[in-house]
Length: 98
Image (cartoon, rainbow, N blue to C red; front, side):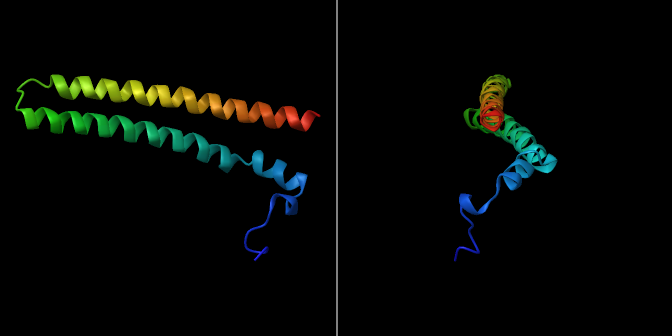
């Protein structure tokens, strides 16, 4: 069983540093944030359009309003996630200096 799921003790410090500095890992983190933003904004505009059609409003006021609300939520989420990534990097670089 331990071969399938290695514990933290089975990874060496060198392995951890290689994993943290891996370019594909960093690319994955940032691309996931972008796809979350796109999904949030897309769902907001799609939902706004559906609600607009449901209530039979001829102007696209609900579509635009809910879409902008989704954009605001997406940017809030972006800033929150970037802050978390930055804090994680600072913690890792601070712990490696000690």
